[in-house]
Image (cartoon, rainbow, N blue to C red; front, side, top):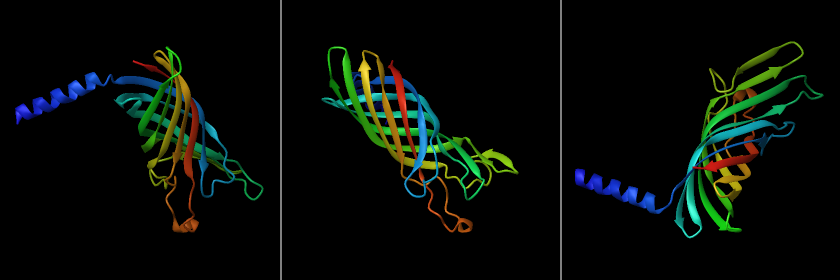
Length: 205
């Protein structure tokens, strides 16, 4: 059994070494909003992301790229003519994109990389602020009896330009799971999903 484990470990190490794995760090800033059903009347808010990942070449210009990111999402709902309720929703997730990558050389030092794949996220923080003419309350977005869903999943897309070990570009997240659980008190209304777009920069280690 020990011999089999040693052989397996050696094979993984060998594949990793030959694959020229590229670990990286990245961070970015942009905007987050809601989309799909009942997103009308909401506005974008500032969003950010930061984390680490690794790109593993597979064949030719293709590879796989798992990463672990801290991501902020949410949106604002300003007061309307029909009500005086202003809601600001800030959601913080630990997110894991699992992307397939394709890269192409532009010149000796420049490359373009496109990455796309599913992401899975778990809510770990944030706050929801509700303002009226008489009250102002702030509660943890995922704390206590909050109806917010902690789990989120969707599609992640990146278009990046690399210069030697530095890269920059755009990142998009499009969620497909409603942010809010259905409630009989709200007539089982269908809630919108997360959507973010951000500029991102990073460094290949």
